[in-house]
Length: 440
Image (cartoon, rainbow, N blue to C red; front, side, top):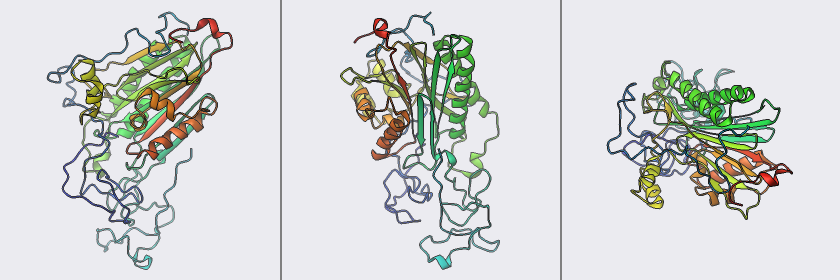
């Protein structure tokens, strides 16, 4: 997601490394990882980029000209089968790349990579035991930071595919089919409230690829938000306040990355050197409440077990398209069809305008499934009805399987972005008939 666009100077129909057919938006070969940025083409997934981030740290004075009123969704008001809870309510193993045998070039060898189509006998010998071989040039060794010492290409990482199941919550994250690394991250956890009742947490973050070190930003934000919630909820902090504090903690964690020396620019001359940034969305199930919080364009959906009841989207994007619709300047169809639709207007990072966490609390009146995801999924199931159709019928009982199916849905649709989804089943207690709220 969020790849910065570069002017197109040429186009390749096949990968120079393995002859795999390419699509116009490819930056790296999906089969062998060959770096195609010498002839970049505009990405086909209309990437999300930050809108005119101010230079340096002078955020307060920066403003977008003619910017519509801020989009805020913290106000009372339910969606679908929910109503806002009263303020005082109680509360995997990654795939391994096995490249063809080759070795780092000798001191006298040319720096240009060998022709990958050459017979095996003409390729360099196997590198020393314990070293990794570059998947792009198939000649250079990989340094400790994960970059080729010969061509500088970033290598596939352990985060390319991640899965976790923890009790009644599960999450899956995948690099997708078009990006050379996974810049999404997630955290799932469970804890207990002071009265002993369970609390379930899911945090999903999406790195802004037009920023430096987006993968580090998303990982830092997910970890910080999760740790904050695990500290606040057992102490009796209301889940909605705890979510707000968790987003603030995540923001501070991402901001601190800007003060550390970056490594990306040492290997990737195409990457912008602005502050690390990401989006965040989270959900907490605690004390019969569903609390959601977000900054950016990742989303939360509600899918009732009884599919005769309507599903609902519980978040609103911090994006150009959402602002156009909120300001009454465009209808939703036209706004999201615009090439600027996915430009985000809110994010976590040192160059963000001003942190404005959005939080909402709902009280479900029936059992269902909470879907927390990045736009790598919802781009292929945007409406609540489309998302509900993509969710398998047994996801309530098998959340990890359900998350895998949803990631597969995005990959089958094209997989143009990193894909991350967390599923939190919500089950109404048997005596809950009298506690139903909202529209049946």
